[in-house]
Image (cartoon, rainbow, N blue to C red; front, side):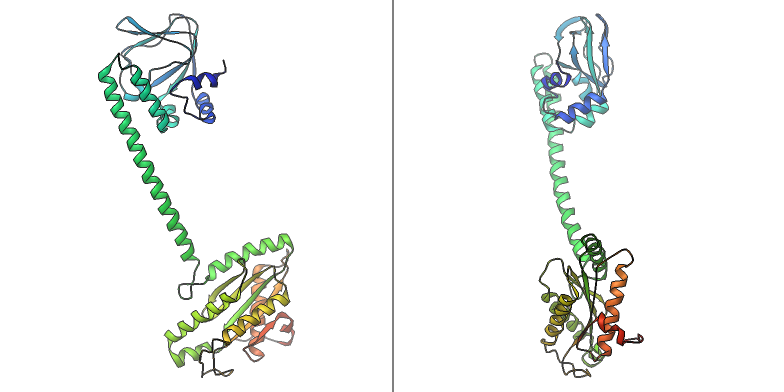
Length: 351
């Protein structure tokens, strides 16, 4: 008979999966016994259990035969489970092969399986007529182990769910700008590199729109920093609401600067989206009497588009968008400039 099929007949091992059975077979040694040879003796410490693969084994207590083990029978569990001395001597009747399951293998593959523990309970129950007091003790111990394991499993499941929830919260919080609640610089950097690799693979265009609030320092000086923070929040929301595709991303780049990552978007599409952002902010009609552009809040945007290739880095795209933003500010602010206008700018200056 196939070894695994034989092990499957053993009540203790029947609940195990095919993979677990194969693992036990690989981890456990086989012992070959000649007729009359003892497998273990009464009074020895029991650190292993045995499954008879072929042949027959006599079970003797105090020199008296009490049972005969046949292929598929499991012997020695009691001493292994309770960590006590062997209560019987096991001796081969004829040529016999036995699979020895050491304590280490038992703990790794069997003791953590509730179905195996229940199978052990059934084995002990069947032997109740031989040792009722030992049966009660073993049953109570196994039940306590099963209950404890079940309790720990419930606690572990609860803890795992809590950790997963907290990790998701931490990931979300760490990726957000605390003031505006849109993506922060770190989240943008990660997204840019991810989309850069995808665009390089697909040979699709990738665009950025770099945005700066016009005369924001004057706004803070005129209305106070609290009003300035509220202004940043409203601009962030306006830009974020302009985007419709899940892959696109608006992030606070730093200070009063924002940046939009526009995936699979060509130069004209990016310019149109940037213009919508500019118009959306202007439509807020936030008073800005210190502005030299308009009596209300406005923004300037620079747009750049590339198809990623080996010689170009993500930082180069950011630099192009930044230079286009400078061109927009040099051109009068409250407008959108693209990289096509960079040729008209001879040098960059602090904004």
